[in-house]
Length: 520
Image (cartoon, rainbow, N blue to C red):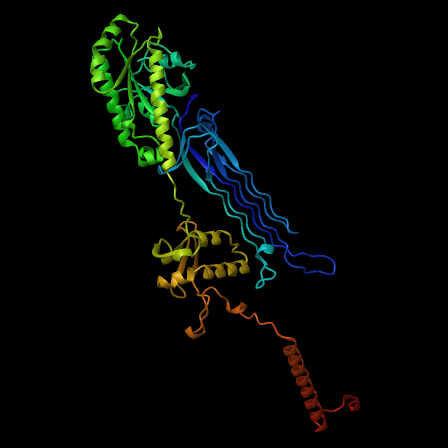
């Protein structure tokens, strides 16, 4: 069973919102005291939080399906449902969150960084919340919305200041063990290091972290060996240190060719990175191939290696590189290397701090509803596999309204029609050329709601009011006392006129008294 996992596919889902409640308050002498149905509780969200105590994604490799708690339904007596609990998932520092198509959603590099990856569904409104002067006692409620369900990719990129790169068995693990308190597994055969090792180094007043990147061989950037799995761990490092083995006995290898090979692999890998991973404005670091380079000629405690180091040192220095001859076994040259790396790291931190201070993010909230001339929905004519030509309505609001509607309740369906009209959906249908009787689809082809469109107002143009209004609810005039008295007298006069007509008919003999009738 692997103990270090730095890439997982995680399936997350927010909790569902609870349904609202339809209820009428009843008490003695008040059989119909108004609606009292409470709202449903909101579903919990799935949250990723950067935690320095976590070092691997192994937990999510073993359990890749995570779901937050759902809200409970509302109840009568104005009782609101309980909200579902959020699910907080700790991840290591340096975790990059991507969606299924590779778009970066978040970069969690500091302790406490948090991001919501799956929103919980909103709770449905009860009939008490839906009551208004127009609709005083709604006989329906809204359904809770389902929580977001998505597939995300977590990639761990080690947050270190210095990256040690080089061939297998070049001494990277020994070097990090000699310069820090890290104790990685060390042996004299290739590929002993199967996971990146991280160590903390102190040089004077500067404290920095150092990581080794295992498994780099020719072709690593194309997936050979283990290099492709671990090259991502150098993306955040401020300084790249080439550890060259001066005591290797493999044919065709020497420090200069090893350096050129690893540089070629780094360059090939850098070309594959996206903008989110290379833009200095986003990462705070210069591009990978422009970062400071340091060359370490290792294993000079071996006499033959010391001679080879003397031969290649001038060549490497002539390329503008800082070169150090060290021995991880005897600790020769480690102090000078430690302080030189500390100076480079401190300089990189100051540059990153200035770059961060210059960045002034501009937040432009997305328009809500019909603000700024943006319609709440878009309409397109498509060919449905079953219904043929249909007018498809897409938009966050109308699709949410459909999900909230209980289609077994006619009043709820009428309320949906009112919302669609008030939201401008009918306007967009008319602009798209839809007429009464046309088939309309709200939502996706799979799972959307199909109905026959009947405009809410079908009278002549001279009688049309504003879109979204309902003629049944337009009469808001409240009669005065004088009008009530006038109406009362009119009814009394009508009754008296009816009585007088009966008396006149009786006088003319059209009506007889039943008490004078004799038995036949």
